[in-house]
Length: 136
Image 1: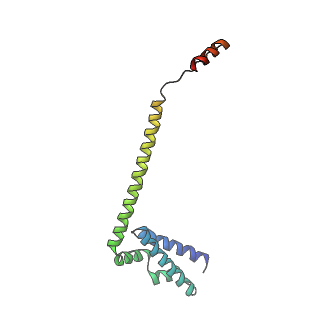
Image 2: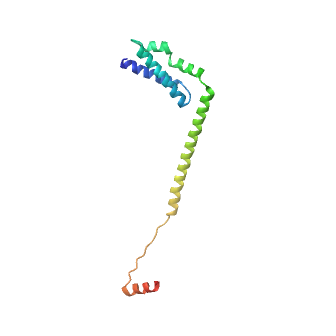
Image 3: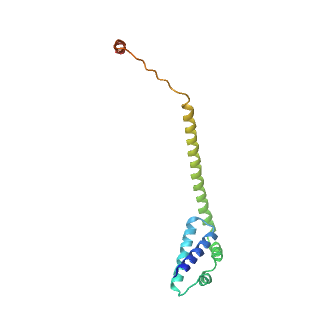
């Protein structure tokens, strides 16, 4: 199989992938099966062209249409709904985390409103002894 045919097959598979609407797992399995079938066909036949592949398998639009006609729509819809719920959960968690972070930054800014003053007193030896004795 030559390089040009490999590029054409990749483009063909990419077009099929763009025309299929379903969940990720189903799409991945279907595309993998089609890809294997096309490469097996191209390797088993001598001097195969893209026209031969399209005649044998159909155009990307025909393959996508056939997929949708034979697909279990209820299962695909259920999987897509689960994916939506997971994505909504992740997005909600990220928004809550970001809101907490913003709140913490704002709160830290209000808490540190102002400044502290330290005073240093210079004491002589007698004052130090007197202060130590008072604390004991």
